[in-house]
Length: 192
Image (cartoon, rainbow, N blue to C red; front, side):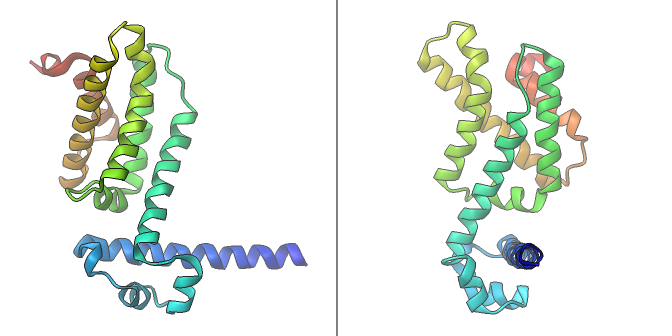
């Protein structure tokens, strides 16, 4: 009986957090965070302020938790893959990431917009760095060169993802994965 009661509470908490999160994301699509109040989030979610404060300190805490969830989810996706210099595996991994981005396009679009904060951007850069590091260190580049290559790959990839999101994700995820892989491995010559 106690276990069943706890499960119900957990579901209610999950539902409440989901509704608050979705309402907040909807508002972030229209307004900068500085213009979003706890009252507006709660009204949109049809949840009272006390319930909001039971889960989050403020709208910035909610945003930080959403960002952390996204980063954690990407890490989970990546944990299931290992690189073996196999192009097919790399495309599959990137395809999985694009599928995740597509499934979560609203929040990804909001988080990867022009006002992306530096800390979140650094976390994204670290993910790309971890993906690339093993491959680049095999090539005996010095650390400065590796840092430049990773910065170029991460910035370009984020720009490409933003463009894809902004244009309605018309291209299939697999195509986008192939484009990123070609650009990072071969540069523009892959398309000329």
